[in-house]
Figure 1 (cartoon, helix red, strand yellow):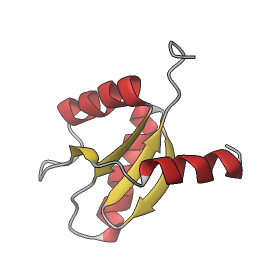
Figure 2 (cartoon, one colour; figure 1 turned 90 degrees about the vertical axis):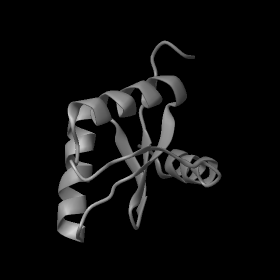
Figure 3 (cartoon, rainbow, N blue to C red; figure 1 turned 60 degrees about the vertical axis):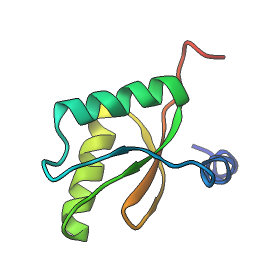
Length: 90
């Protein structure tokens, strides 16, 4: 992904609120389903990843990226910004 596009998406995501918040159970199939639905509908979303420490949070973020096919735009604290282009939308 080009840096210009990434910069544009970061600016666009600034005003967004997290649409999915992970719980104590971590990344479960229903959570992944909600992330996929949100990405299909919005393309650019924020997700709050609640984890005990940085290592656990990084593992959860890697799992989300791997299982959704999304691109990590930004990670600040517990909040990550994800982008996945919807081929059905021009």
